[in-house]
Image (cartoon, rainbow, N blue to C red; front, side):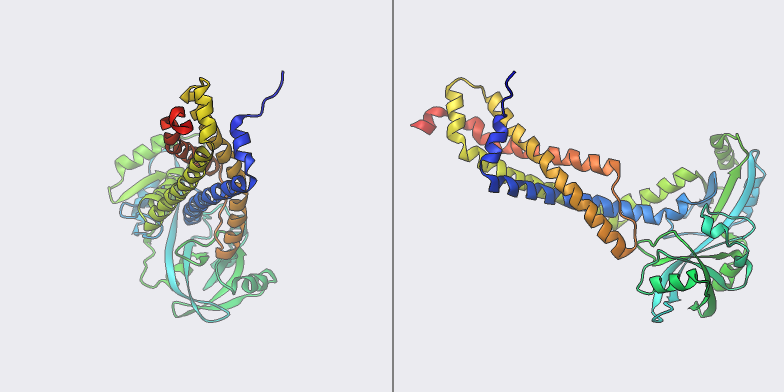
Length: 387
């Protein structure tokens, strides 16, 4: 059987310059959508890093808390009440606050840091680096430093700590010591993270009380139905606290970033703009293709070819361009993800869902452009063109 080269491919590749320009335009639009989705995902992922590393089956937070950006403390009595529910194995309190005037050890410049405090005898994070240094956290005024913090000083500070040095830091008017490292990552609103004991946390934040906690961690007995315990806690605890599974707590933060912040809306608008730009570029290309080959299309019409066949050629061109333009857009996005991640110290990465979403949008924008551009083809009359 003889293989026949599709008419759509022959028309697209007849003018190589226009064909390559079309691919570049589509790749640019795809890359723009990739970047917006990547930035949005990075904001959610970095802001929920602590949530994902919690050692807990269920999480207790204040009903007023809407995000880690806006934590509200609640009484630790609620956590002890939860311990009395059947199926609960252990409980752990966690203190979280933002420290706005942590001094850069190199320049003295103020940095914004998240500080997490907990009882060293009750580890709350599944970070091996932290759990190996629990004993030293019992020392007054000592902190662990996030090596993926933001700032020019980070590399030198981390290198000194790796060599076993301790570094004196001024924080909230108090002299403290950095004595070790861990890895968690900066967030859009904080340059990094510090971890310490609950007592050191309270020494740093003098307005906080031991009985005021920010997150309560609940671990269940093996084999316990988490949903049953959650419902029991919701029924027995006052409405000033909210009970969530660990996964729901992660999604709770994501929902806030995506739906309740200007950043989420901005990135959604960015995706829409990339889609519109790609649609306009594709329309111009396909309209030019239809206009330049209108005589050929009219000839095919005169020979009995139906409009559906000719429209199919235009849609084939659109799909070919969307698929071939997607590949370089995908590769360029990976490069920009890597570059931006190193620049801002926030993990930006490709996900399967993002790749599929942009591919579908790419095909959709090309098909929409093809539908608009083919109006001229449908209206073409061979008698008018050859008269």
